[in-house]
Length: 306
Length: 304
Image 1: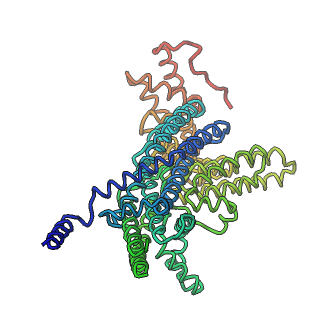
Image 2 (image 1 turned 45 degrees about the vertical axis):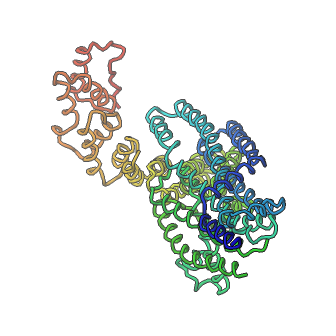
Image 3 (image 1 turned 180 degrees about the vertical axis):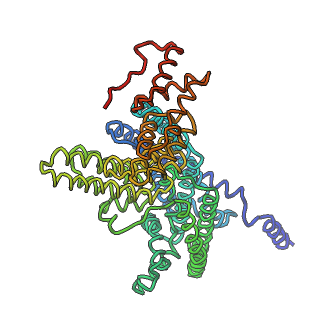
């Protein structure tokens, strides 16, 4: 009678336990976010701030044209690198740290699936990346606003009225644009893809250093994917490349994400408008990478002996 | 092991599916003028290893900017050869940045050539070297236009280079014409296209028609250069006296209510060589009517 009751209770409990719970995932995500904040990851903001202030001061001492553009390029470049490094470093250390201080075992001993754990961890890092991007964007916009005013002042002083008016209206229309915000959105998306990639690699890696190095190498190789693609899809075709090179290039295009597709801020900064369709395609591609890396990470992690 | 094999299989399937999508997206982005940057071996040589890796890692614009700043210091040291190399790298890294093409061309065709003009004593060598610099500037502008076909500024600069440096009014007119067709182009580009066409031997009739079209378009276009070119062409083409431009301006001056717009036209006609008694008389009549002080009245230039 007692054993029958126990079995019934277990069955009821099992049916009540959802395979995937947003609440549990959110709890892990929030804890991950808090943990990363406690690790003072936002100190990098100081470095970012120093870079943009330093660049501004340095530019003031040069007399070449296009300072506003340079400020834009440097700030967007710094944002791009910082978010990417933050994504890789913060994610690479999560799993090894949880294993080291045994938090992972405590969490998985509870009714939390490994998939929920991974999704929660990625969501936590994503929260950090969103906050970091917002902070950097705010700092960037303050500096940009200052340089926009300065450039307009310079034009009024140095150019004939008609030319100055045309250049000023161009600057006003081309500085704070929705496309620029879209570009910053793509920087954020790129960093989330990097985080998902790193999480996937850390699911089978044995040390965080290995994860960091391999992730950075894959990301760097990702910027070469267009070259690899041109070797076997370009006008010359694979026939002109040696067989082993063609195979290697094909493997790179298949297994490595094309990071150049996420690298559009350089063009946005020079005022090229990007239609919403391109943004949607990039967003779709980014979402695809995140889902696939999450799934593959789970496949690696689900069978891993802890 | 099972998990790893499954994971790699998923990556393989995704990789095959996404590569064609990525290729299409890359093509679409190229079509919308995105990603004009191409990684090449020569760029690797020009940017140096660190710069090349930084450019690969998504810092292409920043690397190009830093090199651009170094071009500024090369200019101060009068190192035009180094400047040319730096400009080639900057423009290769950021082909969509119009300013890079524009300033690179200006440094070559104006500053570089001026340096030769001031420092080369042999007149034959001076002319040859200056022409080399002009052509370097032209090359930058032409490559810039190839990367930025929608830029009116680059067509405008090319027109200026053709006219002021290469003394080629026909191509100058063509370039200004192209500039005027692009969005954002300033009004003068259309005028210059017509003005410079007037300087091309054999195309006087076409130029005259265009200048007259400008004249009839609006009084806003009544500028001394327009009057000068029209009067020169009237003489050259032997336009019948009754059709000459001064009739239209004098007619306007004699229509009540048009004094303030007709007077500047008369002044420009006189300043650009018109000696028609009717023009001078109409100008004097308007000066009295408009109560223009003697000091500000138009003076007849001495006869040539």
